[in-house]
Structures are given as structure tokens and as C-alpha cells.
Image (cartoon, one colour):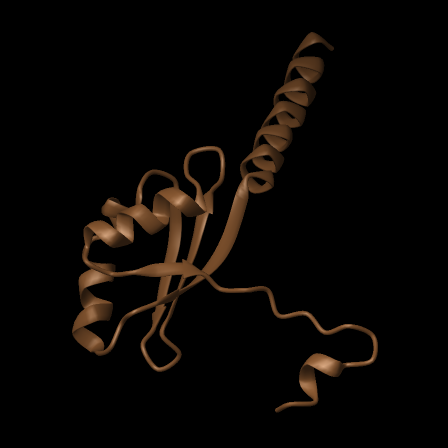
Length: 109
């Protein structure tokens, strides 16, 4: 009986820790002054320069964006921007793209 209680408690604690890990994950897209595949390679080869907690980095040269998924408890958008600057890549957060109810933001497309 005691063994069953210990197993149940350990499973519950493990699930709580997994939930905590995913609660802190944030994904931000940055607009950057990247021009070619070499810029992409430079960023991808220097991911540690972006700071701790980096989970994933995707560079899109065509759209000049860098998408970073990271642990927000260990890093921030501002720190990632500084890390990119250390690689001579100027970046800023991509503005959110949301339309209002009458879609006036999309009429100019």
C-alpha cells in the first residue's frame, strides 16, 4: 500500500514538473538585417551567444526573420537581441500581426 502511494506521488510530481517546463516556453520572431545564407549559418553556428534556455532557432533569409523558442525563466527578448548584436546582426521584435474586427489592417494588401 505504501509503495502504491509513493509511486502515485512521484508520478504526480513528474507531471507537475513537465507542466512547469512548458509554462515558461516562449517563441518570439525577430526582424533582422540578414541578407544571405552565410548570415543564417553565422546565427545557427553561434546559438549559445543568444543566451541560456534556447530550445529552437529558425532563420528565414527570404523574410529576414529569426524565430527563437526559449525558456522565459532563463532568457528574454532583450537578451536575445543583445546576443544577436554580438554576432553583428541587428534585430528587433516583429510587430504582432492582428486584425481588428473590420479587417482595416488587411485592406491595403
